Image (cartoon, rainbow, N blue to C red; front, side, top):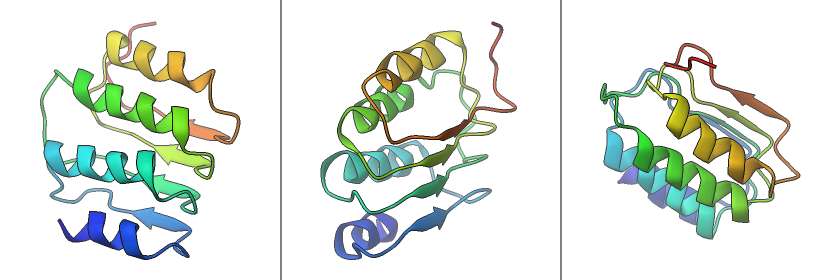
Length: 114
């Protein structure tokens, strides 16, 4: 995927928005995996309204949580319209306790009941 290659090779990129794009489930996980392992310069990431429209986003939430454990650069993450439900949000929030750099997390327009 071209976006993951971009994140691997461009360590000066500060902001990336791929909102309202045709990035599928595997693409989102690929991006989060790169941010988990090698790119710590990206400060803002907008992944709003991805192509996939499933209500089983637990695997995406797990990858977001893993990224929060290791990535110390990301300060703003937008995950609007991901169809995240309570169980997925709990996974994300549990890992936020281990992250001191994230300042803004936008979870608007999801399937959150609490």
